[in-house]
Structures are given as structure tokens and as C-alpha cells.
Image (cartoon, rainbow, N blue to C red; front, side):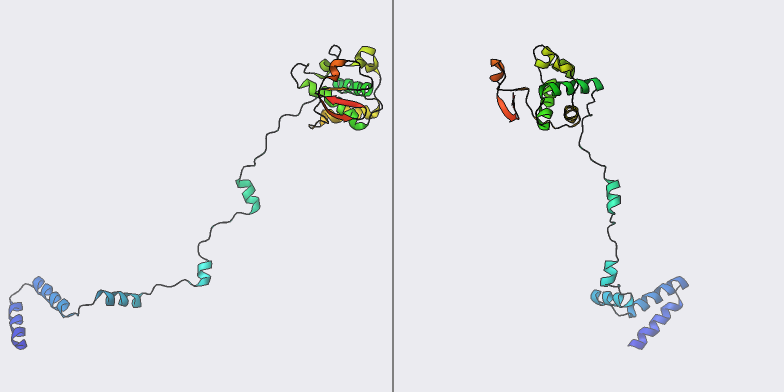
Length: 207
């Protein structure tokens, strides 16, 4: 039976064009190939071109994130600085005048007491109801007794000069008081009615 089929096929091939003969041969060749299951086909492909596995070393040397040095990080991030108001400057005349007032008002007091007296003057320049300059505060009417009796014009000693400059050049004040007086010598009843916040030496400091 197989021999007859082969003979019949040869007979038909004799009468077919060359292009059709090639096509027919291709069909016969494809028909003779055994069919492969999908799982078998994938296994064959893996055998022919296996996918390489990464070792632990290769994995460590794979793509890693770029790390910046501390110096580079500082350059990458803009520097953030807290706002600092411009430093207030004082004239030489203001410094001399404040030194003379400290000398006249706090003679015999400790260095801390002298700085506190200077601080009261500066506190007033920043408070509503008082002049906004050192000269204006010191020469305000009835503000300080040394202005009335003339002792404001005496030459200040070294401690008084240093205390005045410290109060002027340092942002932190020795006291927040707006008034001071000696309770043993003060005769003004109004000044005694002010709220006392601290005592330094013989002076009482009040608001």
C-alpha cells in the first residue's frame, strides 16, 4: 500500500511546475518532523542558550545607588541660616554719655550693677513712651538725678566704661527693668509703686 502511494505521488510530481514541487516537498518534510510539546520545546531552548545566573559577588557589583560624600552633600544642599537682624551701631558720643551716667548712678556698685544700670537706659530706647535714643532717654525731663545735679559731666572710671560697652555690644541684657532706685534714698512715692523684679547691690530694679 505504501509503495502504491509513493508511485502515485511520483506520477503527480511529473506533471507539476517546479515551484509547486518545491512547495510540496516542503510540506512532506514538515509532515515527517515529529511534533514537540511546548514544555519540551522550552526545555530544548534552555539547553541551547541557558540564562546565566548572577553569583553573590556579581549581585554585589550590580547597579548600586551613587553615594555622595559628606563634602558633596553639603554642596548639594543649600545652607540654611537663621535670620539675624543687623547689629545696631552706636556712636562714640553715645558710648561716652552712657559711661558717664553709669559712673554717676552706680558709683560704688558691683560691675554687674553697673551693667544693669546701662541696660535700663537701652531698654527704654526700645519701649513705647520713652525716647528712642540714648541721649534722648538720659536727658528726658526728671529721668535721672545726675543730669539735674551735674554729676553726669564727671569723667567715668574704667569699670563704668567697660560696663556701658558690654551692655551696648551684647544682645542679652543684664535686666529687663525700665527703672531702678536706691530704696534707702529714694523719696519719690511713684517710683516705689513700680513692680520690683530684682535687686542688685543697693539698687532695686522695677518695671
